[in-house]
Image 1: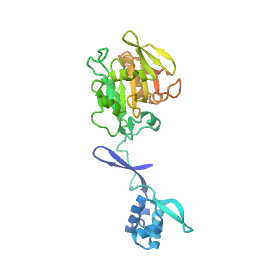
Image 2: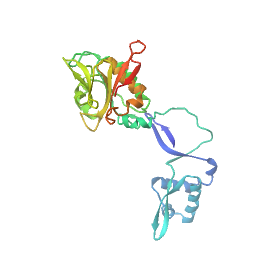
Image 3: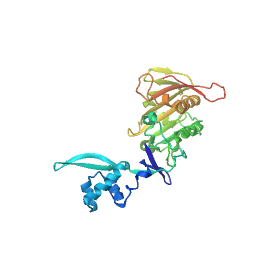
Image 4: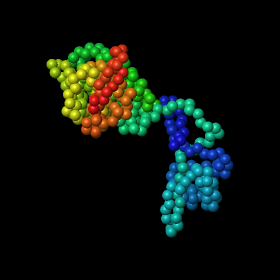
Length: 311
């Protein structure tokens, strides 16, 4: 399908359009034809009603509508019996028409979400508009464990990944966990980065997660998966979870977290580099959007560069 795209100050607006051969338009674009097109753009109508609305002879309307139909500008939407006679209701084929005089060139890549990812990323990305808050742990000492988050660089990478599919966003879409107000938890979809020790919002939602962090001796030492009933102990374990928000069931949360920084790295890398697998349901139950991954620093540079999906 072709689209007519118009640029506005903050976004792009699009209409489905039909590309028309200009040689077919000589008879189709008379002043009366344009009046007919404007009427049909509002609602389907049959020729007799159009003639009445425009106060012109019915035969004249038939003539111009035949030219419009031949040019591919209008088509029959449906038929209906009117006093024993079949009335054909016409509509415009598309809400916009375009004439081209040479082949189009690629000048701009619009943010398009691959169809297979749309369900997973909705409602965080809605019609190419960012519809969420990113929440990352504060780099200052805070929370129950007085921990400091190192996850800000991961937030930047994740935001750049989201930007591939986003054409519009609002200022203030990134928050530290210490900045978030109680009413904001209820009013927004949330993308949470980092484990419960460094992100206090993750600590609040942890008990609701299908794959959650378990603490022992005042430290989050394990990841427990409800779908598989498995316990994971490694510091390189990360999780990816999408679920309804426990703060408000009308909203959703997307969590990318690990026991330690290396696990959070693994979850972010998994979503960015292995998107199809990361957005698929859990391997064990086939329905829960909860993934467990393991990150590997294969080249020894201190950063995760390989991810394995455990479930």
